[in-house]
Amino acid sequence: MEKNPTWMAVVAVAMADGARRWLLQQRPAGKHHAGLWEFPGGKVESAESPRRALVREIAEELGVTLDEHALVPAGFAEGTGGSPEMPIVLFLYTCAFPGGAITAHDGQEWRWATAQEAGSLTLAPMDRQLLQFLPG
Image (cartoon, rainbow, N blue to C red; front, top):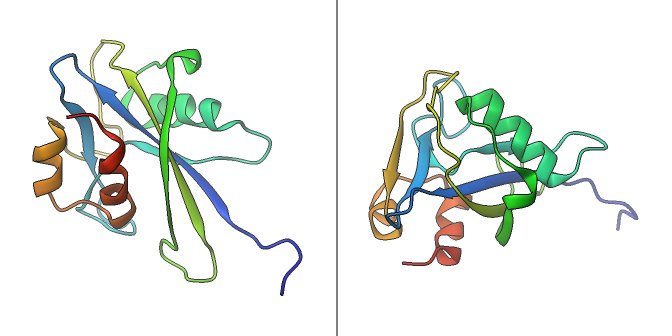
């Protein structure tokens, strides 16, 4: 057994619009799980806290500025992503949508959906696990 197994930390945010709907985006073409819906987020870089990673990723992907102190831990999912040798832990945070324009920098589609509507979408497997942590 390996003493220090390698795993990847990934963060995602469920931003609420005030009408019990959550922001989802489609995975861009050419990426693992392309075309599937997910909560926006990304990988935590070396020496970066999960909250800071989420603030950075959302600014890069959607042009939205989050307050890291407004991010509330909600739950997590485990999986392997694209490689069984690289376990992934996906940490979900929630927050209110801070306002402003959403600009999908990778050209992906985005939409607001209730938890029930999100459940009927073709979600990435780990994001489907995260639905249990959303109210309503």
